[in-house]
Image 1 (cartoon, one colour):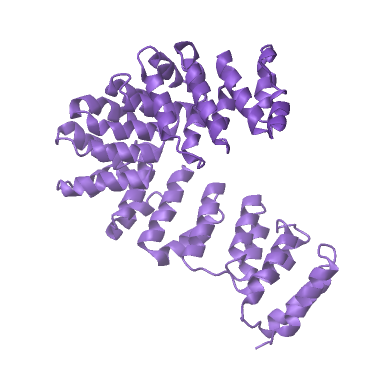
Image 2 (spheres, helix red, strand yellow):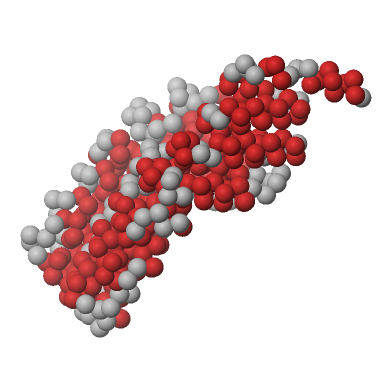
Length: 443
């Protein structure tokens, strides 16, 4: 046994001090635990921060001696000149929390303390501008935890960051500031393009002492593009005894109101269930703005389903693709089921791709046999069905499980269509469809 270890030790001797960094990093991945341990020790003695990632992997090595050597080597690298390297490796450092061969909490705290030290904290502040989002998030965590800078300044920087996760972390820290300090930061957060950030900021903002500026902000947020933000604002205003409907109506009625506010006002009226104001909403049905026309459809579907069915069916011919897509989705939610004949008429009247896709989408929510009629009739020659083979496969796999029986007219039409489908269907597909028909009983 002694001879064996003497032989192994011979691979790395004291005379091998000239071994370079790349070779040592390679040896740190060697299957031999002895080689890994020696390589790790030498990496620590080199003091080169380029070895840090390799050492972090070895900190979770399956051999305890290698893990201890890696911890010692990492500590040797913890000098101010290497602080930037530790910042860049923060994702790998905190990944150790999820590694289970040993507890790495002490090491992570030691590195965090090292970076939070006044001699090294500038590296953390520099990391707040890193291109890698995970690095920025962890730098903010350390900066907040160790108060590396003024909390107000850190929160403001976080709110202005383009990463939503960082923005949320900045807002969560505002609870530790007085209202005067946090108001300016919250005002910035309320302008965030991310609805979740605006909502979180508004919830904190509205808990501040009631002032005119707070009420004004709540009214403004009642016309936010996000239903979540609108809901928070309108709930607070109702609790304050404010007439929310009056504000919404004023916005909807004003000829010079921006389209985004009119849209939000229409949706908000529906959200507070003011069916008596439906006529005010329908006044905008012919708006030049697709977003407003879409809002009218969505609000009407919420307030008056019967009226919405007719509006949405007419909207399938709208000039805006977005309105057409919304109308088709609302129709399925409203329980409207189209016959193949109506969908075919729609496509023949308007051959735009968005209409073809909407008709195919609506066919998926129609009668099983009506869908098959539509698919086979519209696949050729107009090519109105996108991916006909996938649609037929879906019909045979999912729709054909339905026990709905075809009418005699449907059976006759489908037999004829299957025979005519040879140009765009395979023999197997036609056989499967014919089998489905033979199993069905006409009523």
